[in-house]
Length: 225
Image (cartoon, rainbow, N blue to C red; front, side):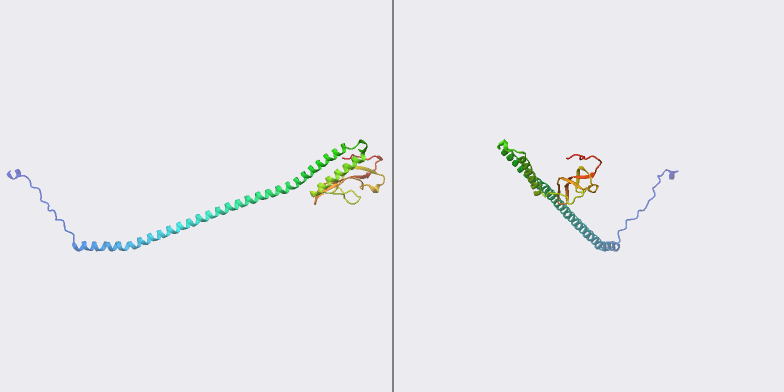
C-alpha cells in the first residue's frame, strides 16, 4: 500500500540537441547560389536590352507615322485651299465674261437713250412744216441703224437667208400670200424682218411672207407681228 501512495513520476523524454550546421554544407550553399544568380543575370540583361530596343523602335515608328499624317493633313489642307481659290477665280472669270458684254450693251443703250433725247429736242425746235412723215421715217431708220451697230459691237449680226425658197430652219412665216401660180407655192413672197445670230447661235429667225396655194381668196391670210 505504501507504493501506491507515492506519486507517479513523469517519463523522461530526451530531446536531441540541435545539430549545428555542417560547415562543409554551409560552404557549398554559400558558393553554389551566387553561381546560379550569375548564370541568370546575363539572360535578364539581354531581355531588358531587347525590350528597350523594341520600345525605341516602336516609338520611332509611331513618330514617323505621326509625322507622315501631319504632312498628309498639311498637303490636303493646301490642296483644298488651292481648289477653293481656283474655284473662286473661275467663278469670278465666268461672272466677268457675262458681266462685261452686259455692261457694254447697257452702255450702248444709255448712249442711244441720250441720242433719242437729243433727237426729240431737235425735232421740237423745228418748224411744223418741216416735220414731214419722210423726216420721221428717216429718224426711225437712223435709230434702227444705231441698234444694229450696237448689236454688232456685241457680236450679234443680222442676216437674210439666201434663195427664194422658204427655209423653216432659219425662217418664220408670219404671213401667207395666196399664189395664182402653183409653181410659186413655198417661195418667199416678201422679207419682213431680218434674222439675228451670234456666231453659230441662232437668236431670231428671219420673218417672211410665204406663197401658199390659192383657195379662191385673193386676200392675204394671217397677220404681221
